[in-house]
Amino acid sequence: MHNRRDFLTHLGLAGGAAALSLGAPGALQAAASPMFVPRPMAGAAPRRIKLLILGGTGFIGPHQVRYAVERGHEVTIFNRGRSAPGVFPGVEELTGDRATGDLKSLAGRKWDAVIDNSASRADAPMWVKDSAGLLKNAADQYLFISTRSVFSDLSKVPGTVDAPLLNKTNTPNWREGQPFPYGLAKSLAEAEVRAAFGNRSTIVRPGLIVGPGDETDRFTYWPVRIERGGEVLAPGDPHVDRIQVIDVRDLCEWAVRLCEAKTYGTFMGVGPENGRSMSEFLYGIAGSTTAPLTWTWIPREFLATQGIRPYAEMPVWRPPTPGFEGFARFDLSREVAAGLTFRSLADTTTATLAYHHGRDAARKAKLSAGATAEKEAAVLKAWHAQAR
Ligand SMILES: NC(=O)c1ccc[n+]([C@@H]2O[C@H](COP(=O)([O-])OP(=O)(O)OC[C@H]3O[C@@H](n4cnc5c(N)ncnc54)[C@H](OP(=O)(O)O)[C@@H]3O)[C@@H](O)[C@H]2O)c1
Image 1 (cartoon, protein in one colour):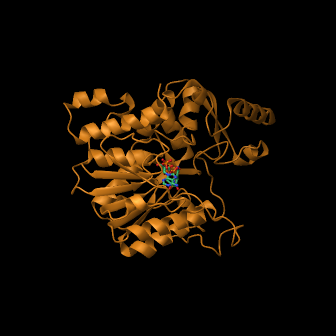
Image 2: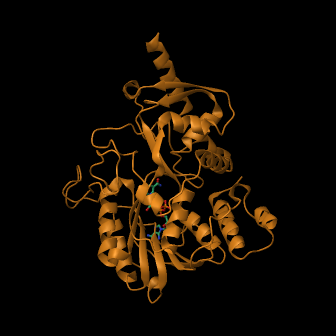
């Protein structure tokens, strides 16, 4: 059983012990959480860097901290100190508040690279303007974690990172004076990074980030549901609808390597190449579980009549819609050339289930996403009734 702090502590232990070469590999594995035995590293870092991580204790930051420490880097994190203060031994922790512009603890310091995770809400452009403005002469590189939601048009298949972006004039249902919606906020924040850092900017646009530590449960719904067995409602077209998500560890490890290599530019953070069909995705998850089950594929039109929406009651699934045909069909040649790698779906499934099973009983019983068992059963019953 673990709570979130235990989980982060285990990440910190695994990274810290590896970096300091404490004991034999067996001792390291004993010290770390059983679900976080460190993977063999793909190779030593080409250089040791001083890395500043804005937002080191949320979902994605801890995976960057763990990997960067394993690679021998000198890591500083910057947060308000609310989420998990002091959780990473040996990692410098600076406090401040981006919402009030309190960045005093960053002043007068130097880093090789900055990773910005925490500018994710309506005021992201202002947060980034402040932090990138302050750090432009204090760091060589600014890597901004953006999002796949910045695009205004994803009709081209395959999609590429060069697709048109949301701006203040093309954002649907937004008027000047209103809070920026998520995609527009991130698009404007990207512009602030470029304004301050120019060609020393790195922008990474993830799709759904999944895996251990994810509290949104959007991917987690599927391994948990499939592990329960029985008749599983599988949404949409098994061969046409596609999925591109990213394991949090693949994203975070690559972000650190982009800083090591001083790789600049704009990249997608989704995977794998060419994506997976919905059937490859669900059957692939089932390959890591053992409960007896059957699949009932139900088309999106019938699901709509039952109040089942893509990405909501059936998370991760987003069938192509006009203007978004390339949503889960990104060409990733640029990203792979820049060092993005992909864990197997089996690895992501197993790590996600291990994280889930470490939660307390109440949290395990109530996922944050996906249809309830009762709702799924009712839809299956309705589907079989109309088929008869
Ligand atoms: N989840 C996804 O599927 C997905 C998909 C695409 C893109 N993204 C992007 O990926 C990033 C996800 O980040 P996340 O979920 O790990 O973190 P987050 O929730 O965006 O941020 C949490 C981190 O930021 C710190 N923080 C929060 N408010 C702060 C403030 N006012 N001043 C200073 N620090 C503050 C928190 O520590 P304290 O609480 O101690 O301050 C914590 O370390 C976001 O940029 C998001 O847009 C996510």
